Amino acid sequence: MEKKQYQLGDIVQMKKPHPCGTNEMEIIRMGMDIRIKCVGCKHSVLVPRTKFESKLKKVLRSNANQEEETT
Ligand SMILES: [Zn+2]
Image 1 (cartoon, rainbow, N blue to C red):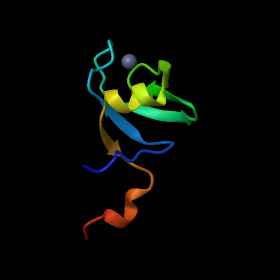
Image 2 (image 1 turned 90 degrees about the vertical axis):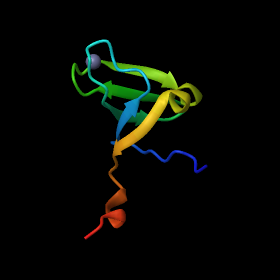
Image 3 (image 1 turned 45 degrees about the vertical axis):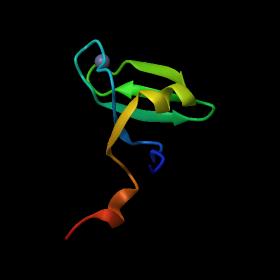
Image 4 (image 1 turned 60 degrees about the vertical axis):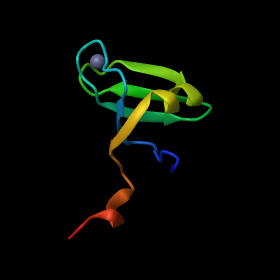
């Protein structure tokens, strides 16, 4: 299995939706900890990288994947 690829500015989907009902989070800071912001209610949370990776379901939109476009 490939390791999940994510980077700053990506929109990701977590295994559990945010309490507001939105399941899209934007990565707004990367470091030892990762800060993600709920797209729906703009609430942001800081989570340790390992925890983030275990809760990450998939990357919905990435800044970098333009070369993978099928045209
Ligand atoms: Zn929310």
